[in-house]
Length: 189
Image (cartoon, rainbow, N blue to C red):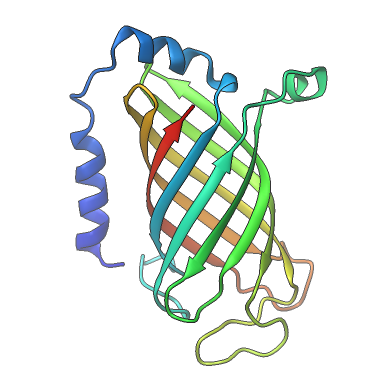
């Protein structure tokens, strides 16, 4: 993803700032642990620190379901995270993943939110030998972390810029990992 695409994401996201939520939406954002959400998006796949594709090509199509935070003492003690499941499918024969974990939603200024996610992923890439289209990740099951900056457009509808990182966490000698950056639409219910 080049600088023009990155600039587009930033300008698009900032253009959302003038939108204002109605009272019902503002009340919804104050109870962040009581909703479930489905999110769909597209990401540039396997980006390096210069925001260019590193090894694997294509885009990743992402779908994720975030469950309401369980109302029990354990989940409340760890700041009410939402369990999640999802998948990212690569469009060019690169690595795809299925994942599960926990997402912490941090609302601010009534219509903005930050998500922090942690969990595990199962990848369909290579384990020990790299090919032209896929990296070698050293393990089938990997760590999956991510974050996003989001905006509640109107009641129940969100948009967010997200970043995901997948690697084996240094548990294997081979640990190239990959990072995806993209845009997602969400519907809360």
